[in-house]
Structure formats: C-alpha cells, structure tokens
Image (cartoon, rainbow, N blue to C red; front, side, top):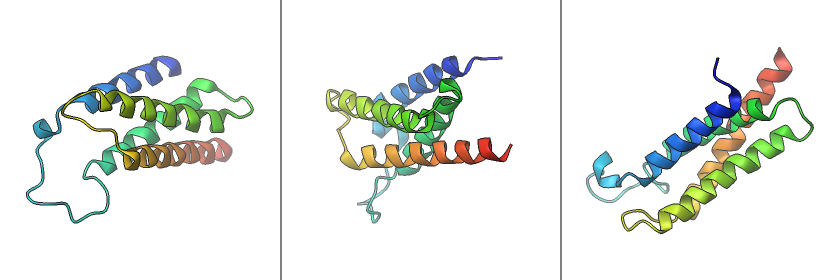
Length: 118
C-alpha cells in the first residue's frame, strides 16, 4: 500500500502540473463568465479537499493535525499561485487562494468527521 506521505507528494505534483497547463488547452467558455468565480473553481475546491484529507492521514493522530493539514494545503495553494505569477499564460489570483483554502477546510472537516465516526 502507498504510504500517506507518498500520496500527499503525488497529489501535490499533480496539482502543480495541472496548474501550469495553459488554460487555452483546457478550452475556454464562449463569452464573458456570468459567475462571480472562475470556471476552474470546482477543480480547486475538489483538488484541495483531497489534499487536505490526504494531509490528515499523512500527519497522523497528533494534536493539531487538522489545523496543520489545512495550513499545509493552503500553503501549497499559495505556493502554486506564486508559481503561476511567473508563467506568462497564468496569473496569481486571490480568489483561487480563497477557494483552495475552503477546499482544504472541507476535506479536513470530512476526514475529521469520518475519524470520529469510526
């Protein structure tokens, strides 16, 4: 079985790769967006929820593990946003940081509930 830390590392690598792909390769919606958030917001939310949950498993049953997992996942998101600011076809977005952090909170919360249930 893959260790939890290897899973976290692999997921982080997948997030980095997905974050540097030119958005034009993913297809762009026709016309301006009518949503107040990016069309990629669901991917951010899910991606960082998974990272937060994996981080809880990697940290183990230590005091403060849930808080550390959220901070870790949000930090990865911040690092990726800084990386994107150096890539001509990508941009740094505060909204993405917020969605990443929300996703981490969701993933860690779900993991915490599952740990207390069984």
